[in-house]
Amino acid sequence: MSAKSPKGPDAVLRVSKLSTKAPTRFERRPDAAQLSAIAAELDLLGLRKLSLVGTLEPEGRNDWRLRATLGVTVVQPCVATLEPVTTRIDEPVERQFLADFDDSQPTGEEAEMPEDDTTEPLHEMIDLDQMMIEALALALPLYPRAKDAAPADLSVTEPGKKVLSDDDVKPFAGLAALRDQLADKTDGDAED
Image (cartoon, rainbow, N blue to C red; front, side, top):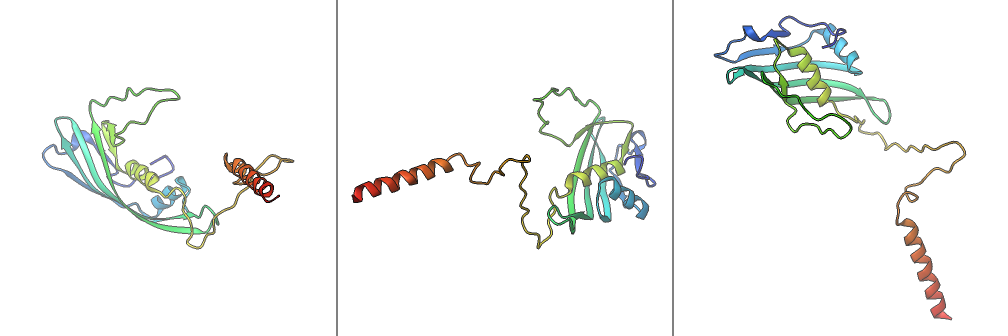
């Protein structure tokens, strides 16, 4: 969570205090003030029943694995009408915290995302609320639409220029029209 979002009790777990013999169970359910802060942080119209419930268990000598379920009801503006759209999300969350995390990924314009996006470096603390917000941000619908929202028709161009139509951007539309004209001309010559 960012500085705007207050943390609840037990939101941050110190790795050195975790049991290495059994899974550590957790259940995060933010209160109303935290929900408001998270909704504002993610530009949501509303947020209800947010929870992250799961376990954190040792894996090998130094690594840890988090397995949880994110549950939440979100209200977002419709991309076409700006009317509120309510969505229920129930999604598994899995993260592996590695003591020997190798983050030497290529950088630059052509750097690719790693295939495994569930691994993270192991730090002294594991912030469950930060994990919950990150999982929520990734699970949000990108283009929420109201059930009765018509498709948006948007035409944009420079002032004084003709707006392109769908047919204008189809590369073979002009050739098809030319073929049809030639076929009509050939049919007309055959009738003479």
